[in-house]
Image (cartoon, rainbow, N blue to C red; front, side, top):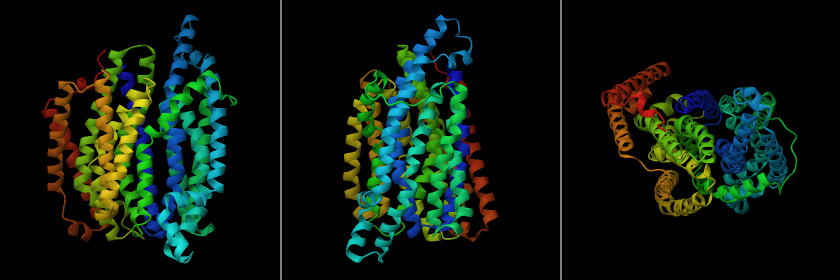
Length: 540
């Protein structure tokens, strides 16, 4: 099992790396075209709302509820196939998944009706969503008219949402297809798919602006077409796997009913981070222009290591944990969770250390051109420092939460989610008046840390997982190595003014030298401290 997990983890991480690199290119293009001004704030807002619902209906709560049930059905079909003597032929397994195909048809049909209604409502009621999550703009529009800065943002946001909301429909079915393929052990397709969205947005930003009212509209259409292309891309792979089925409405079927019972609390529990980010957006709409953009760019840099390692590993272990639970293998279940914690610790600590030291140079090299100013670099770096203090917490959540959902326990995470969200609200109210948008980032980090700790405590109390002495020693070695790496990178780096005086080519070369020296020092240090590949074996 260890080799299979590692292979799957590498595949997902490599594909995710390609996606994240293109995601950074996309953000560089957005920063160049719109900077951190009015249009940037509004487009990022219009993109965030459908993405929030995507986490609810697609990649977040739905996936956490759907994958364990699908794995259960898949396991039963595998056992039936084994009895028929087909267990040695993967292709035969794929075409003998009768119950699995039936569940997929029922879920896709039921989800399709719901998501269509939500999408249509979102397009028709786009001003309402702007009022809910961009209240500051609405207040300015109401009292000072559409010619005010806030009024302009309000009307533009309502218009852009009508274009970006259909992305929710496309990405929901894309996520459903990805969950199915992941359960069948075909991780590469779903991991690669986000690349297509980034390409679509980049192409529309570069070539579509001249055909639209403004760059913001071009980017919005990029989101629309990106969602459509992702949806169409998955279909041939579903057909090849033998699971391309005709959707049917089946609200009361056994499988859908089971998923419904799991998804209702998971809608809240899994989406706590997203809800917190939307609350941040609401409060930021009352702050100075640029606040939403600065938080966005900082969050995108945080998402690079989080998506590459945290989400990548979580994607791999959820189907494995669900199957182990179905097979009643508690020892392997615990070992798989421990493997996930070790892997994200291996990459999470150096990512934290490196980004802390090189935050401003990285932001400068990536974004400081066109409409993105030196002041924007400083503002984004302050938000990034706040977010980075919770990087490991965000990563641990991604690995610990599947420990509940794989066992079809959605009640415990939702209780924890309520505590974390209420705490975030309190932290926002305490910190935003004094620290502005940076206070929002600090509050998000504090609530995520609380969330991670409560998830771990719950698993420990349930006897499912706890950090062993060996794992604690292992993590301590990684932390020490990351500290050494931070010192090395700091010595190789320069002051902010020196970076500003460099040409772009000099900045890139200096940054490569700093990153290369840091990576080398980290791996040399962990080797000296005795970290070996054997530490990542899943011991049954």
